Image 1 (cartoon, one colour):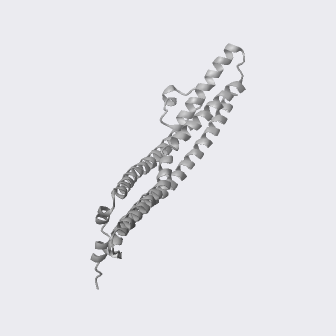
Image 2 (cartoon, one colour):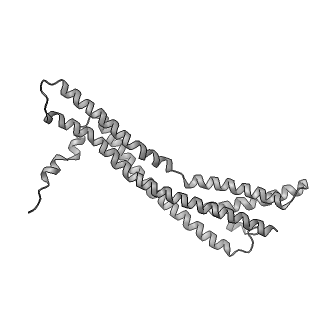
Image 3 (tube, helix red, strand yellow):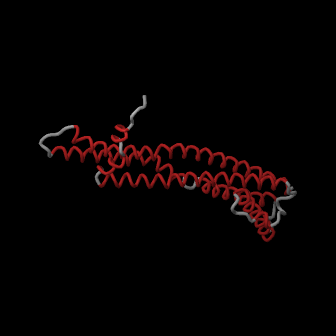
Length: 232
């Protein structure tokens, strides 16, 4: 026997419920819808960015293994600031040779002096790339934590408005109260529909970011070791 969903669909017509919302509820629902669109765009864009950076890093690292000396790499290979691994390498080598030039002028050119400056440059580049990996994550975290509260605010406001409207009537019934309450609850549903996907997306992107940062730290450590070995 086929099930008739018409009464259920008629009772849950979102557009009609939205029209019953007051101006505050409509503004909150519209704002949450806008936040949802932006959040989805940020999540897909961030995922594609992280996957692209990881692929470029691994390609650059494989190419770097074939080079006999890091200190004598051609400028065309080092000047790739769009690749995080290349950015770290460029800063380290530039700091190494800059320390060598300064050390010769001041009569303090030692291997330890060069390596210390190269390691400091690696740490600065590592911090810069970490911020690059974590960009836009604060926005998603704000959506995850803020969207339910915006929805709750709209619900409390809508329920208060519904009861205020009923209080001025001589008789009150569930038929007169239900439209206002259902409209108020729509804001809570909107907040959850925005926050729940963003929560899963944020956790996924956070895991990807932490993995890339760990790989970047391991690469910086191995780069410092290789520079030290080649300098001896």
